[in-house]
Image 1 (tube, one colour):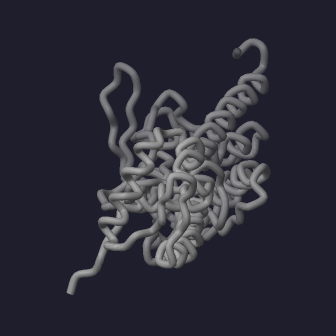
Image 2 (cartoon, rainbow, N blue to C red; image 1 turned 180 degrees about the vertical axis):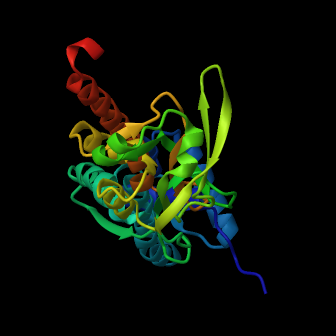
Length: 316
């Protein structure tokens, strides 16, 4: 069984005439020619098989069917217009709940202050932060955005790179003073604290300008799934460790850690915004990705400035 259908735009023309009381006034309101309004209403009547207006040379009056149709369609079209406006507003300004997940240590040290600064101008935005090293199912957990570190695996999710970070070999001042390390190969004989979140926590490849790359297998004497715990063990003198530069720069500046082998580079890791694939990104996600990328850039520049200002004049 088939029913009658009507063009939505023609219904808009009909309602304009019904509200204005004439085809001329409706045409002026819609900023179109009167003939177009008359033509569209006539086609609508043809689609519906009913007469909506009684027309005379002096006035236009709704028929009984036209009155009933106007009363039913008017509120529905207004609701549709309101829904479109709300959608446009939601796309332009963050609102609702922004649910983000990140590793616990990164969520506390980097993500939280960025989120606070981002949300401050938007009273309609609420934050929900899931701090965990577990790789969550973003769709099943209804998560808008995940911040992931290191090297991404292939997946159906979309990713946007926010920043890069270097990996540094660090040790406590006492450990560094008692064990001179001048080449990556010498790390194999040193006790090391391993981060077992990584796929190969003990195997690292070092590179230096003009020198052949060197792959080393570390002598792991302890392991942990927590970067802050790894650094605590390193600071306590349990062994050397490898950590992202942003996690150790301040401790190095304060003299709590020493960077070993500064002329050798390890593979850079990435900081990524990962989100479910979809045709349109909500404003809250799209704007925070842009904001966080800029925020990380400013933090990196500040760290560079701080480290340079901390150097003695002869080493600058």
